[in-house]
Length: 226
Image (cartoon, rainbow, N blue to C red):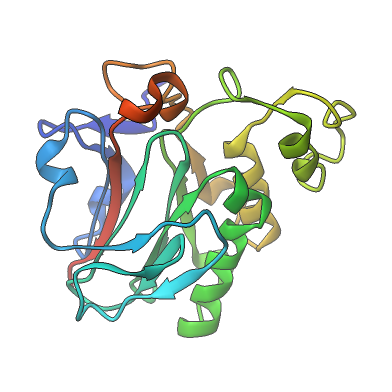
């Protein structure tokens, strides 16, 4: 089976089916994609581990405010989030040529930021969840992400079948966000999980859990070209 994401010569991971969209540019950065990570046209956020979604009109560059999701339908607007274990999530609406990028750490995931980003597209552009497609990029996997009971308990809503969330537990941030997207109305076949663990692959990814304060950041972004 081919991997969900393919690495290009610049070190950026691309979701191959989206390369067919001539109106869309997208990618998940790695520690090898310095040119991509440092692009001057990114529109970004002061990421605060929230459920706040901001509209980007394309006029500003750099960080436009506090929040953890950006969405737009403006040609030329290049939206980005920075991660080093948190889940980067890209959402596209092909019929309306709209898109969103999401930074989903454990706090944002517990606050259902993925489903709120979907709702932002619905409210602003009239998107139909059935038309949306999403890719969840490299993040710390359940193989490496163990949390204390105060964090684990906040995921009971997303994992109602689990009886171990009152103590230390491993959490699958990908699956929690995937379930939110399905609950928001996306079709299962249109939600794609890369399953690449940032902590497990030191040659390719930065990881805060693995490297602590010295960890770098990777940029995941999306741009409406026309």
